[in-house]
Amino acid sequence: MSANRGPRAGSEGATRAPDLAGVPLSAVLPALQRIEPHARACWAYDLDALERRARRFQSAFAALSPLVAYALKANVLPALIERARGAGLGAESGSIGELVIAARAGFGAAARVLNGNGRTLEEAAWAAREGVALVNADSIAELDVLQSAAAREGSTLRVALRVNPGIETPGHRYVSTGGEQAKFGIAAGDALEAWAARARWPQLALDGVHLHVGSQLAEPAPLARSLEVAVELAEESARRAAPLSLVNLGGGFGVDYGAGAEFPLEAWARRLAERTRRLNFSWVLEPGRWMVAPVGVLIAEVLWVKRRGDRSFVVLAAGMNDLIRPALYRAAHRIVPLEPREGAPERVTVVGPVCESADVFAEDVVLPPLRRGDAVALLDAGAYGASMSSNYNGRGRLAEVVASAGRLRRARAGETAEDLARRDTDDALPPGPVT
Image (cartoon, rainbow, N blue to C red):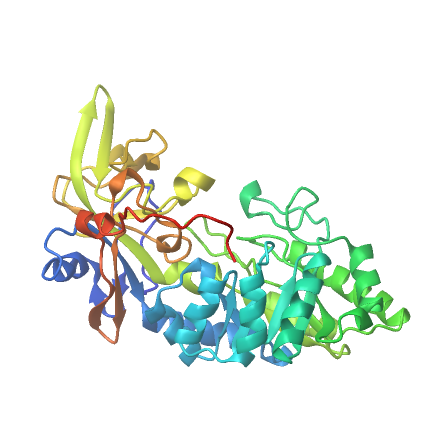
């Protein structure tokens, strides 16, 4: 997307919407309505910007020659991840569904990473049969499951142990994953014992450590602390005659949602390379939000402008079922009118149409005048937007549009009420235990 995004929603003065790979954002929804006449909102992504970010990330960390595995949970739209693959990224999956999506998008076994703290037998079997570059195991008991699956397939799985380093991170607690209260990871002492006893799992190449301490980090201090934990664990494991050869530092690189705080990617990459230049490890990184948040927007029509006393509410066609981040995390997304009207800016609360008081995108922000039928864009919505959307309130998920080199195409159709009804069944289930 264009770098000219305009000021943050709530600032004084006019706001300016970015373009989308050379296409004005104001043209996106009308173009979609030619094939989805009733569409009042949609997601839109700049594939060219995604490719630029992918290449920038790889260039920053080139000294480590890492496997850069894009975290599919951030956005799993095939058109996006196929472009990411073409730019040289791998794919990090958290479920068998994401493994299958990655394979269908053309990611080979050497580019696939499997995460998750609730490993299923089906996921282990798929990884052993189809192949992955790495499984990050979240418990010692999981190693038995992976061993059995690999033994049945006559394959070998490379495995890293996800260690909880007890590192707290700033921000909402729901995006902190490395603290003592987080559900993820195992104790360092347990990991050391498992590495020393790895002969128990002959089908596993148990030679890696995985640490991921949180998401949306604006500064590298938590990552620096997790790196030191990884190095100390590797040194201690080597002293126990169980050397490690792989370090996976996860992701967590924050983006600027409008407050002027973005993770200093290149500076951290240089610091990481300098700290580890004498260490002979294979490296894995798992960026998600950093890769796709800035390349996507949520476009929505203004359904109503309601005034009650001295308060004004702008009701959008998109709601919390589409973008849950503000309701779930109190996340703030900049909001810009696509064709700003003349007139004095107004202080408004921007809400959705869902029957929930939490369905609020922004409270008391200053925007140019808005009227029914206008359209706005919620910026930096490419990550954890569409991938977390739902059918709550009987609302179909929105269409997703991609742009590249000045051209638009619909990459995923919007859902209608009829689409939702087609899922209804009245199937008798056979009695007896599942075999």
